[in-house]
Length: 289
Image (cartoon, rainbow, N blue to C red; front, top):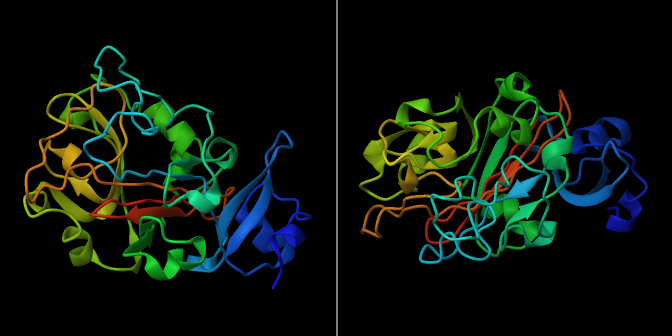
């Protein structure tokens, strides 16, 4: 078993490149290097669906009451203000934040989010605050895409959200982005459906990842993980957003907006994995290329 310091000598843009170039098969923290020569740490999933998935981000939410407050980097830390339609804008900018080992307890985004060119994404729903070595076993759901859909949108989530801005008043409910079918690594359609509140379950079809869904008040959310909305109440089961994010009141059975997200992006022909964190129906996701 290699130590993290042993892995420092690997020179690669993604976990897939480490897998192919050095034959590494152990899940854990590795060092990657951007196109500009910046080194950073991230988590590599070296076994799911062929391995080589690179963690690029996590979205974490443990206080629905505090939505759009300090710490909500994937929506807005400036309050729920329609006059700031982009919110913090972190879905389509080069800001980075957080630490990989804290990805289940805080938001996380590394340079791989915009630097790696990927094909697909994977999502893990993991309970909050679980240590990294237990992410895989603790995950309530794990799934990935196999359609190479990111090739259509610039090869990563950074470019995808340039095509589909997460911005208040950018469009109507019918202007959502792509809904991509998923393949389950752990869990199924029914466990996805029952992850959400009773009143939410008739608002979506499970078995998809949907991007840039807009609710009936023209507020954009970034990702509907594991589901495809069939109505316009996407704020009840989708994550992230811009300014002016309109939330439903906390009604028993809706469980609104309780999600955390993590994403992995490898280079072309490499997989990207997303981690999800779950606490009181809060999820964290991951993406792959």
